[in-house]
Every structure is written in structure tokens, then in C-alpha cells.
Image (cartoon, rainbow, N blue to C red; front, side):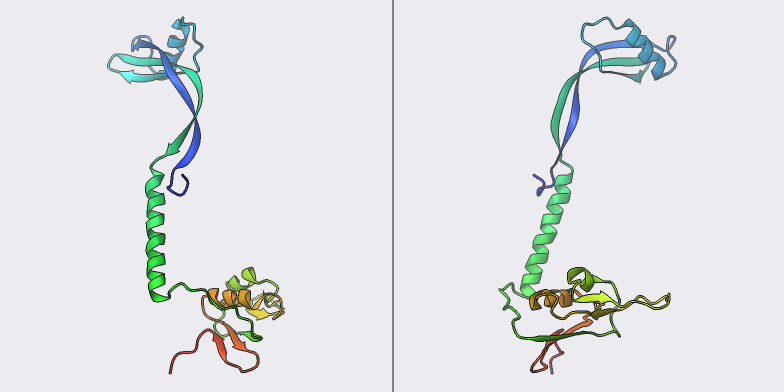
Length: 192
Ligand code: SF4
């Protein structure tokens, strides 16, 4: 249900059990009309609420009995849910077209990592993903410049977790190389 955008919610259910018009000569506002209606109501069913709507000659007052709670579904949100599903499907299709989904080989070889401080924008994505590997530098003095990320422990996460953090870095500031050959693993070097 939630996937389709239908969100269930509980709502009180009332049943109309009484009606009485109240003339404008007796009531000049809905509160007065309600009071008059309640005073004159002689039914056996206890009223949970009284609503008075303006009419041509005063107010039409309705008395409601409380029936219980019911489960309803917000049907308008189905369009929101459907739109999200369509956008997700298109994104998957387009993404798969440019970079087909295939199982990625695990990054098992020893790696060397560093942060290019010239392009780090200190948004802490790497810190959030792998806090044992990346942290922001401490600042000695207050500065308008955000503290940059640096590597505190290259073994604080698996190679694959570090690779994901590097891939999520919006500026490509995390550089991963093969520790033995120096071959660039991420970000890929431009061809040619
Ligand atoms: S994710 Fe990239 S830009 Fe953000 S703090 Fe880490 S290294 Fe810097």
C-alpha cells in the first residue's frame, strides 16, 4: 500500500441522527444556533457533535452520533507514489543504459588513499560513510574556511567501503591507488 502511495490513517466516523433548522431571528451566529439545537434536542442517541451551516433563513443544524474509528487511505498520494515509482524506473533504465548493472569485483588488492585538499569541499560525506578512515582536520583557530578531510586510518574500513566513500565524494577528492603498482583505481584517469 505504502509503495503505491496509499497511506492508511485512522479517522473518527460519525452518523447524522438529527436535524433542525434554526431561524435567523433566534440565532445570529453558528454558536447560538448550536446552543438552541442542543437545548431542543430530545432524541435518545447521545450526540457527539453538532454542526450548524448557514442557510437562507438562518442555520441548518445537524446532530451526529459517534460510531467508531475507521481506517482510510489517502488516495491523492497514490499519484505521488506512482510518480516516484516512474521516476525511479526511468533512472534505473537510463543508469543501466550508460553503466550496465553487473556484479562488481571486490577490491582485494592493497590500496593507498589520500585526499586532494585542493578540491575537497568538506561536506563530510566520506566522514559519514567511513568515520574510522576519514575525519575533518581540527582547526587551531576559527576560520571561515571549513576544515578539510584527511585519512586517519587507511585500515578503518574494508577496501570496498572506502571505494564507495570515494565514489560518493562529490568532487572526486578521494584518490585511491594500488599500493604496489601505483595504478589509479579511483577516480578513473581520463583516457588518452
Ligand atoms: S566527501 Fe570528498 S569533498 Fe566531502 S569531505 Fe570527503 S573528501 Fe572532502
